[in-house]
Image (cartoon, rainbow, N blue to C red; front, side):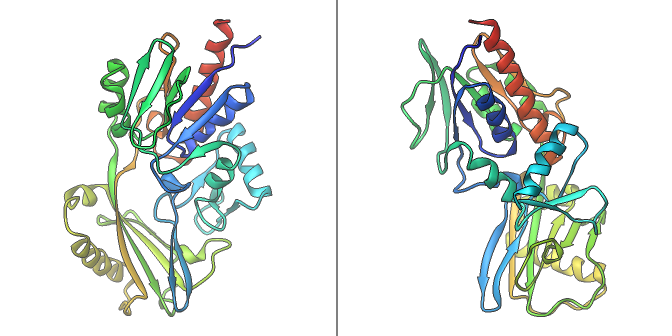
Length: 320
């Protein structure tokens, strides 16, 4: 027998959705809330229309790898549904979402009750359960709450209610990343598809080389963590100019005037590693998950969410 609960999950990225998958399998009623306008999180894709066609940029996670057998089963489902494909140019174990990195997240989100554009600013424990606070937040009282957001955002929510959890989140800081998105009417005169491990450019890739991409040639250039930290508060125009110059130097080409040149600052790009899979308090029925528990890999986010779902399930089975 099992105690079925009404559970709110704050954050509908991969970790929150993975937790929701596990909880839903156990028969719990799950509702997810996310501040974004749509699915993606760190696996986001930006689309921009041009006279040459729509251009897409995977400006968050560039690809993912698969090591865990259970995660491989999920990735096989993504592939069967057309939401993921191998990208062998990067390595034999590299995968990408298709037609965009956000596709697997969208596929998972369709299986759940997700409300977008809801910024939860606080959660409060009442006699009959948890209540979410924030513009647009529901008036529902939940039996349990899961926080599935970056460590820095989790710490802000946890500090008033669960100080030991908040302390771990505060100690597990993320690295920032400036990202430059470029598109050109004609392909650059280079055989290079990816760049990595430069002191300024940590990673760059021809985004349009990925499977199922269409439109003009597009590039995603991500600055190294150290460079991004140093230039975190620089203006987008200044960052764009410096990254374009370094990109041209690395490719040894003269860049034409781009169709699109845009920057995005990820304050919480590469997660830390808390050294455990997730946190759950059976007494207060509060859980926390995210890639920051296990490391800055897409798979780590999924593993953390699944681990928390199992923790909640084991606890629910004991409290009948």
